[in-house]
Amino acid sequence: MNDITEAMDSVKLGLSLFSDAIGLANSVKNTLPESKEKDSIEKSLFEADKAAKLAEAQIANALGYTLCQCTFPPQIMLSKGYKDTNYRHKEEFVCPKCEKSSIPPPDKPINVPPAKGYF
Ligand SMILES: [Zn+2]
Image (cartoon, rainbow, N blue to C red):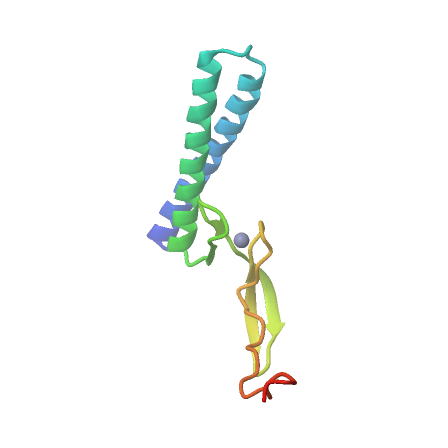
């Protein structure tokens, strides 16, 4: 393991703890009575959560993970093992949110005969 990977792991751990703290703050916030302060706490927690997810995605990207752009901040696509494609096995990455695969469906055939009634 090299220095950069170790540093990334530390940052990742820090971010994970930060996300946990946001989660705890969110549950405490829910017990507060409705007020202007509660609204601004809610807004700040939302922004902090978004920033943490964005930082997490940037770290994942730096570590070579594929990102899915179905949301912002982007989702981190995770490996589902190898998939048998036409000519070889390919590692497949799947988005945990929209379940999009990194392996696109086969291309539509070209030179298909025109639909009936075309001529
Ligand atoms: Zn997605």
